[in-house]
Length: 212
Image 1 (cartoon, helix red, strand yellow):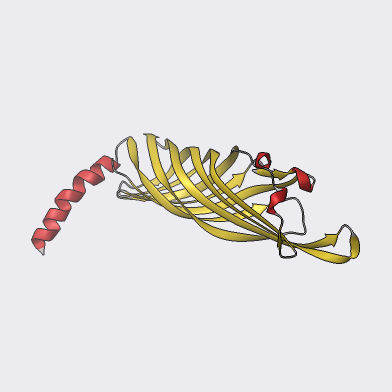
Image 2 (cartoon, rainbow, N blue to C red; image 1 turned 45 degrees about the vertical axis):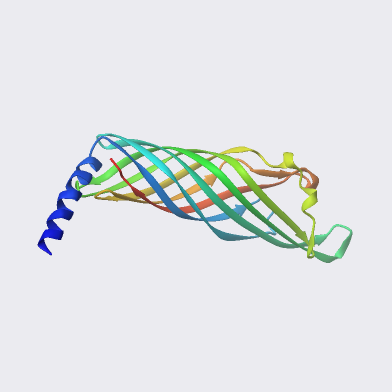
């Protein structure tokens, strides 16, 4: 048992020392929960789970640090509503819209170390994020009928801007972050529905491994 502990300690110390340097790099995986938002108040916004994974690169400058990241994210969201039928005011129309996006996200984060105890650090951070759409799936259902053909390819934007804020903990060579992303632009604006627009807001938790 002592030999196993000694070998583990010998392997661990170089990794921990590298994680304390001014530059860090490593993989990052996480879970996200997305919510589609719109200015049409009758819609019920339902959250859906997704996943994300990629790489981060940190440059520390005393209390501050810069951290660009790049990761692929699967985002899903649903909107439901019962709205008045424009052809018959006495009836309502059931509308369901679901979106699944696969995006490449590139945040550029500025962070600040609130507490630095060497073995453990507490951080806050924020910054802009650019999102590029790799794949998209949109389904529009009206009274149970598929009306997705109303959506044109040009209704989707290929790239949008957002903003992220959050906080994190570094424990030895592991890094845990909890954050929220605000969509600053509409990623979908449906011209055939009077420019009906969507934005995507997202809460996420990610776990990273500092390789150096």
